[in-house]
Image (tube, rainbow, N blue to C red; front, side):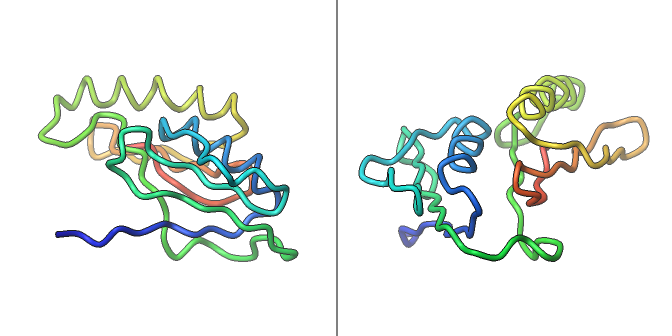
Length: 127
């Protein structure tokens, strides 16, 4: 049996970054975490871990050592053409929510993933 766990994240604006990640992952706000200095989001179906955000005074200063991959096509194996279409559909939605595209990674003629930054500059991939 897996251990129940929460991903803890530092943030400049916990409520804003929680709202971004709730949109990106299909999560919802966790009740009771609506203070300016903390926020938490949860998988409404109870499958994924909670993600907590705690206000810290310092900004991001280096590349992430870990990052989230937003897997828009779900678990494999995939139809790679459909997977690429889903990636290309999700990226503009995240840009509209404040993310930035850094680059696309291609494996020959196949779109592998898009490297992005969230509104606070944390790297993640849409895959």
